[in-house]
Each structure stands twice: as structure tokens, then as C-alpha cells.
Image (cartoon, rainbow, N blue to C red; front, side, top):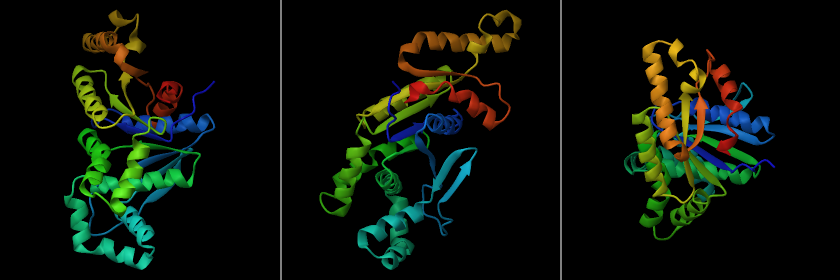
Length: 272
């Protein structure tokens, strides 16, 4: 029997490890298995002078949403104050914009509130978040805890408490740290996983992406030395740490993003 997906999957890791392609491929996997899913990103982490608004599109069968910070903040305040006019005015004030930009994690608190609101509005929806890299992911995960400690009562305290309940629910949220099959990338992924596990009780697993060695198994003597050494180093790393790796994904021979995502889809059942 197929395992039921969680409601929120967070993909994170150092830049360049392929988490965007993997996140999109995972949404495709969910959709192909008759689950309603959306690929989500953040357009910005700070308030700018102008807001271009959130964007939504269907791209190669995948629903993609890029959330805009100012729009998300305005929606949150409008709902809390029950006034569209006042909410629009508040987010335009220099004080509010400076507050969001200066207080660590405030922007993520707003974004996470929007994400959980989306989940509440559609109980069938699985959200796959292509999250900010490493250090930002740590700030995002701990932002609700920080604000719950800062505000000992009131609306922000209540909202942060609700967010913590969802984000720290292992049946609701799962975090995937993406790594490349190199020693440095693996060590960075381990450090990030440790940091995340210190901040949340949900499952935090490492997926090793873009492994070349499975394609060259039994053919190592036929390839150039540099390529052979790379593949053998990958194989040693995987053999030594395989018990700590939830999923090991082979290198794709596709020459465009669509082909690579299609190659990945068939290997993603373990990510559920």
C-alpha cells in the first residue's frame, strides 16, 4: 500500500546541489500518483521599494507558485485586522518594512503563515517548498520558536504557536537535505541535518543527488582517469555512509531540465 504523503515537504541544501530540479520532480511524482501538489518558492527575503506580487503558473504539468513577501504580509495583516485598507497602509510604512528587513526570521514567519493557510484552505494539497539554502533554512525553521519567545501573548504569539504545532508535527512536515556525492557536500549536508534536528522533531533526511558511479558500474576501466576517480570516490562515499542516506539518485543523461526531471520521477518513492 502506498504511503500517504505529508502536507509539507521542505527541500534545502547548499546552492548547486539540484534541489530545485529535485523539488519539481517530486511534485511531478506526487501528481502522477494522483496527489494534489504544488511547487512553492519565495520570491524575496526582504521588503523592497516595489512589490511585483506573487506569481502562479502551470509549467509542464506542475503548478508553481512564487510567493511575494509584501503581498503575503499584506494578506496576513488584512485578515488579522479585518481591513484591506489598513493592511495595505501598514505594509507601506517605513517602520513596518524596516521591521521585517531587520528582525531575523520575520519574513519567514510571514511566509510560513501563508503556507499553512494554503494547507488549511485545501486539506488535500501537498506543498513542496524549494527552500532557501542552508543557513536561511535554519533561520526559517526556528523563526516561529523565536517569535513565540519574544511575544509572550497576543496575536503573534497565538499564530506562532499554531505554526509550531504544524511545522513540528512529523505527520505534517518532512525536511529533505540535498547533497552531492562529494565529501565536502556530504559533510555540509550532515551539519545542516544536525542543525535542523536540533530545532525540530520532524524527519530530516539526506538525499544524495547526481551520482555518476551507478552508470559506470563495471565500466570503470573504459572511462578517462579523471572520470573514473570521481566515480570511485562517489562509490566509496556512498558505501561508507549509505545507512545515513535516505535516497541515492543517479546522474541523469538528459540534456534539458524536463528530461532530467522525468528521469528522477521514477526514483522518488522513498522521499514520501
